Image 1: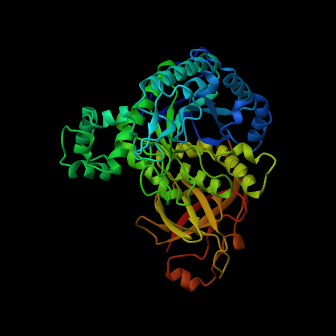
Image 2: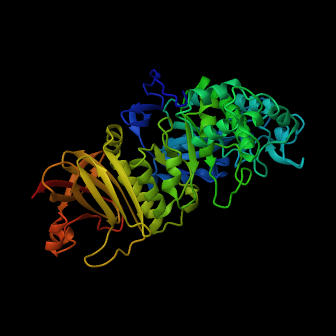
Image 3: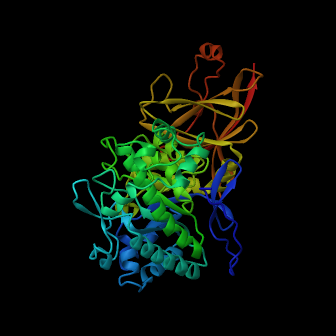
Length: 544
């Protein structure tokens, strides 16, 4: 089974180890015994290489309402001399995070970061014979350690094992809640490794376990992988080209298997010492990428998910790094019944707020994290203030949201001016969601977003910005829906405090009531009126 769900004992300080747990319709991250939403931010790659540099960073991140920081800890700084480990930076980052009430996710920059081997120790970099590099089709070497190098894999795993052992001993407060293994792996410049070891392995038989997995899961794997296997004859054995045919895609499947087994060995070594949830992240395919190698070939891109699911059972989540506008389409590709959604790198600003709400609401996701969050210190603007306010609202609603994720009574909307309307069915109601507008005018907004929770019969919680909502029946009975009440308000640790009861001009949109009644409408809407994230509680009734 790919997704590891564990039950842990209690530590001597009675704090449960963070873990993933299936709760109703959602797989959730459990921290201190309760479902936890990651309202995160990833630091720039080099930030945690100097503790003095980091001293003002954590107070800033806390001030903008992050609850989790994603921070790199690299192999070169942990093991500057072979067999000699130094955890000074890790201990310092842990201390600074705790002082600012911040959770951590450790990003293990080991053999690879962005497809290259920049973060391996100097003694690994210098010894290219002991640690051979990936070679391209023309025979030229790259700066990437070959995933066929078992010695590099074993030493990477040994260093990671030592780190996790140290972390278990020195993080009894459970500051670290998840760990990323490597970063955006894959080969750039070719579809596969053409080193001697790789060529020899490519000519061998496909591992029996991979073919068995495909045969046993034909109704549950991606159609592209199944078709490729079937078009080559649905063989039960053979070389990589015999089983999957020739071409770039077979090369990529081969590399995905090599990277997945390499990283699984590292994750397994770490989990043997300290069983935290572990994930890998993908450099996703860009519009200009036509073949593998334009993007890192063999990484955990969506097209390779079946390979990773089979070959990397100790990796709990496959995650996308999203810097493209088609956020909704990409998140669909990374959400499976066995793979909960988490976004470790993406946008900040207003788009980041909308993306966070959509991830958590629509996909019942674990959380969201924009990249380079420390780079905004001292450069606050309205967009980043919105991220802060959005995170605060999500934090205040966390118990309500996580309960709704579990019960399946939550969804989300994310609209842009090129598609300003959407219809959603939740509970007993059909909800027409649209970018907010005034009477008789088209919307002037570029985007809007919302989490929608059906928290009780005939009652909804709406949280977001820039949208309006019209409700219709989705079950038999009276055909028109009216608002019994619309309240603005605030949450504090999941508890609702009502503010103004909105009525009159605050909810009316169209006074041409004959036209509205002909469509079983009342002319009124619930809408977000502020230019920042807010929450409404709506009660409905039906009549005719």
